[in-house]
Image (cartoon, rainbow, N blue to C red):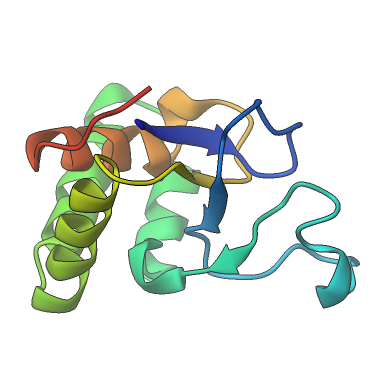
Length: 128
């Protein structure tokens, strides 16, 4: 059952399974009781979100070089033990259970979830 990389708030795919929000903050203006019902996430897991500093770096990235600098910073953060163990766990779970991870960004190519996709694949995750 491959792991899906999704945009939070988008309609769920059939069989998508547990949706994990890898974002720094919950969705604004949405009651906590409605997160899952409105297709944001079932579980909030900010441990895999970029730090506040890295988010600012990503949002300000206007050139490919600036984006690459963000990618290096985020990869460095995901190399820390807690994040690394979390990535290993998700990669292992991708072979046993239906689940998805995501962020709010509209464009995956300019979002940490594109890097998260790579990191999970590097750890042997089965990715949809």
